[in-house]
Every structure is written in structure tokens, then in C-alpha cells.
Length: 329
Ligand code: ATP
Ligand code: MG
Image (cartoon, rainbow, N blue to C red):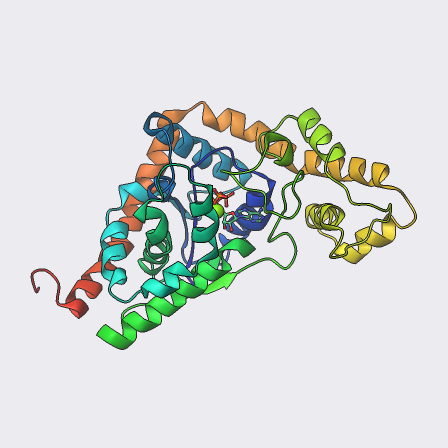
């Protein structure tokens, strides 16, 4: 069972990333053979960004993942831009990717609507590069949050079309999306997902937020009318907080609803705040220790890239042979 997932170094990572993705990465280390995690700096260039900050952000993300429990002895952790096989495979996969499918991607529609100056072709091709990330390792399983469901499904389609066209070379992967916590919503705008590149400071709980900031953000989270702590389609704010508390405590959402039955929003929000502080504090403390040593972080990423490249170059050899591209050998 090979596991692969990627995370963008686009800014401070948040509670949604932690609950939807990072916790799954940590757990996957014991099942994956290997478990491969990639900081996708090439994806980060599909929207405006500051080149001088990108490397810093990669180190932030690496330190965050290690602080959350990734162990380079049990997984492969690397930076996408260090393994050029990803971009070459992206091009090869373009030959079996339907333009119409890319046009239907929710993420492209949402992110292109946010752009002020340029909707880059990179943003349009983002799902093909993501398919290349996964397929280069012939991964079986891709742990992601709910927003990436469509992209993993496209990755499957691309793999199957490649195999049907050129011969059996790639593996069609499955997504692994947690039942609860796969779509944590913005605290100020609970109808949109918490996001690294969109939303307001107050709506996003960062993994490295100070405890008081976390408590304040949860206290001021937009609640809904009424005072009952139950999940309902017309209660997106409270439903989101119920999910957060359930995942953080490892309980079922129904259990949370029972516990706060008859109570008001105030006590409930305070309980969510405390639980999130307790969950994130060890990660924030460890992050501060690890982030200081940039030489060690770079060495970890370099070592990971070497190991990743061994696997990806093997796949690329098979892809080139099957497609008749480049020198035959
Ligand atoms: P952006 O919104 O700019 O795409 P992001 O917050 O989605 O940034 P990514 O690095 O793209 O961050 O996502 C990393 C992982 O976190 C992905 O598996 C994604 O599905 C997951 N994820 C992102 N946001 C959430 C969320 N709000 N709830 C649960 N999982 C999430
Ligand atoms: Mg994203």
C-alpha cells in the first residue's frame, strides 16, 4: 500500500489542514509502504506569490508537518520542486486529460474567480500536475480533505485513460477522506471552507496561533439564530463547531450534541476553544523548536527528495517507453 499526499506552502497552515489532512498523514506512516508527503511549491506558483517568501514557507510547512508527528524515518517528506519528474509527467499526462474535465473543476472555478490580474494557465493545469504528483509514485491511496475529492477522481480517470491508451503503466488511486472533519468551515463565513489563501484572519485558526487567539476566534465565531447545539443545514456555523469538537476529542458528533443539549452557545464555544487549544498547543511548541534549525529542515527535505526521485524516475522510464518519447533504451 503506497500512500501519497501533497500540501501547499502558501501560508500558515490552519485547523482545516490539520484535521482534514495532516492528522491522516501522521496515521498513514504506519500503513504506507512507503508513505510519501510532498510540499508542493510548484502548485503555489499558480496564484500570485512572493518568490523571496516561497522558500521560507516551504520550511514553515516542513517544520509544521514534523511538529505534527511526521517522522522522516517512517515516511518520505520532500519538496516538489526538487524532483523534476513531476513536471515532466504532468506534460505526458496532458495528452490523456480532457480539456472539458479541467473546465469542470470546482477549485479552478473558485480560484479563478478570486484572481484580479491574471488567471494563469498553471491554475487551469493544477489538477494535471496533482495527478502527476500522485501517479509518479503509483500510489494506491491519497489522504485529502473533501475539497480534493474531485481532483483525486480526475487523477483516477487520467491514470485509466493513460493505461487504456499506452498500456498498463500507472495505478489508479483511491482518495481517503475522513468521515468527520474533512471540510472545516471558515469561522466568520461558515458556508466556505477554511482556506490558506482566502478568508479573514478572524475566520481562520492557525495551527501556530497562541492559545488566547484561538479562544478569541472561537468565541467570536459566527453562530446561527436559535440557541440549540445541533447540526442542521440552516446552522452552518454551529454544525461546523460541533464537527471540530467531535474530531478533536475523537467522539461522534451526536455525542457532542447530547452533551450540550439545553445549554447555550456560550459554554459550547468556550468548550470548543479549550479543546482546540489543547489539541494544537503541543504542535505549536514543537514547531517553534524545529523551525529554528533551517539546515536540519533543508537536509530532511533533500534526503526525502533523493528517495522520492528513485521511485519517480522508475515510473517516468516506463511512461516514456510506453509513449515512445525520447531515446529508446
Ligand atoms: P487553498 O485554499 O489556498 O487551496 P488550503 O487551505 O486548501 O489552501 P492546501 O495546501 O491546498 O491548503 O491543502 C492541503 C490539504 O488540506 C488538502 O488535503 C486539503 O484537502 C486539506 N484541506 C484544506 N482545507 C481544508 C478544510 N477547510 N477542511 C479540511 N481539510 C482541508
Ligand atoms: Mg487547497
